[in-house]
Amino acid sequence: MRLTRLLAALVLLAVQGLAPLAGETLASIHNRGQLRCGVSEGIAGFSARDTTGRWVGLEADFCRAVAAAVLGNGERVEFVPLKASTRFPALQARRIDLLARNTTWTLTREALLQVTFPAVLFYDGQAFMVPRASGIGNLAELREGEVCVEKDTTHQQNLADLIRDQDLKLRPQEIDSASGAAQALFAGKCRALTSDSAQLAAVRLLAPGKPDDFVILPERISREPIGPVVAQGDEQWATVVRWVLHALVLAEEYDLTQANVEARVRKLRGPQGRLLRGEDLRLAKALDVQPDWAMRAVRAVGNYAELYERHLGSRSPLAIERGPNRLWHNGGLLYAPPID
Image (cartoon, helix red, strand yellow):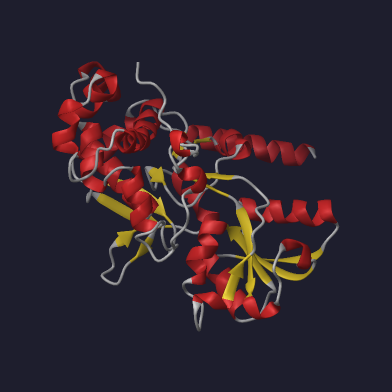
């Protein structure tokens, strides 16, 4: 036990030694003229290469929004594909400036890994997917057999807790990558695959045969607030990332789209209007960004609704209902904090 605590302390000291100083991250990004963004190795709807090799998805476009805000060009992003097991080491070692890789916000990660989750980009929950031919229609009918799960994710512990609490005979089969876990299910090496429900919807598109051959069970066994991650120590950078996301939410709330933001923002009053028009010089100076940073983000990728519908919603193959990812006045959980 003492050795374990000593090792944990040494890890913390090493991580703290790598923590950036206030303002250092933005300075590095400006010096290289590029934002380095850690993404998945390929999760449809979140971050994956299309047929032309371009990175697309909710998280990929969020990286572009941040690049547009701080560099004036949403295309000045270097996308760094990472496994779940390598995402935090890459952030701690400063190989990336921002992690946007289907990552759940937890206290353990913030406290022990010395990282910060600026805000929630997507609310989800852990689910299970099974072959339709299995006849399994709900979680109560899945009581035994192999369950594939990706290593180094919150899904591992959630599955272990479920097995213990409900005295199930399920046997976790831990696999090093999301794609490997999916292929194991498709090959019949496990009875079910567990992950975030949106990730399962993306995986189902890759199924041999047709997506309808696999069913996502209705139960959710966890809450998964997924968001961007930055290294602790540079609060200025964390605030910039946080408020780029909030700017996209504000834009939806005030019906500012990628196409109309230039015209409609002129009519917007109050602190929201000043922020989005680029008139709040005191905030721009404090954040060390150009005054029109918020409008740049919206102009580059659209508002939150546009991002969602394009990659996850009705305009995408996934067609995932927005649910908790709606604005607060539409029954969802999304809203931006006050500006003043």
